Image (cartoon, rainbow, N blue to C red; front, side, top):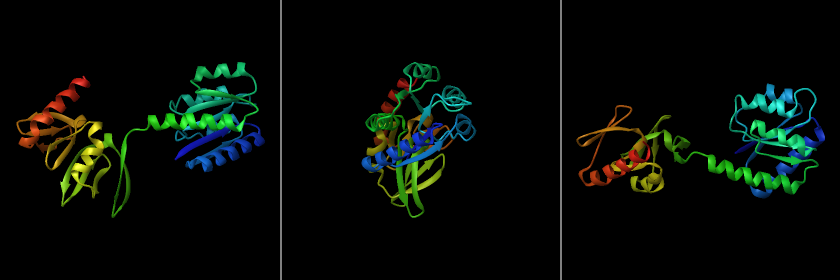
Amino acid sequence: MITVAICDDSEAMVETMKVSLEEYAKEKERDLRIFTFYSGEELVENYSCNYDILFLDIKMPGIDGIQAAEKIRRKDKKVIIIFLTSLIQHALDGYKVHAANYIIKPIKKKRLMMEMDHWIEELKQREEPFITIHNDKGNYKILLKSISYIETYNRNLMIHAAEGDILCYWKLKEMESKIKQYGFSRCHSSYLVNLFYVENIEKMDIKLSSGVMIPIGKSKKKDFMERLARYWGNNI
């Protein structure tokens, strides 16, 4: 889901943009959640750091768009701010608060759609890699960086992650093919380890930063040690 906030002192402008974004979401089959604000004060007081994109009018009574953006940037460095303005010289001030772009009023639907396409693609690139798992207890979205290791468990898998142990019905080979490129390595026929959490090697065991010891299979040791050496070398 992409969360979008619109802030403009013109109710007509806010409504027009909201309708255009809803049409965009329907046409592109995207999941958008839209929040609306009608003053800089209202935006700042009710701001949530969960917004992905913020369309912000510059010229507003009270706290204007630039002032609102300055306050927002103190607590949210990631939100994509796109200024709305009638005068291009006002838009230039936006770069002081790391605005992503500006749109000159009156806003054309085609331009708005182009901005959405561009910045949604940017958000996809920013997103940290994850896997989605389904088991009898529900559906889970697990960030790969939170997984320390995965082991076989009663013909299934047990994923050991920061959020807890999660049962997965995949095979280890299938899991390995999906996440190997993200710093995971097979050290044993029954274990897949996130190299980020490897603290040291003690003979035929891996010691993770959590203190957990993972065995190294004889047939896997050479390849595992080579991958670990490359990983450590690339991350010094």
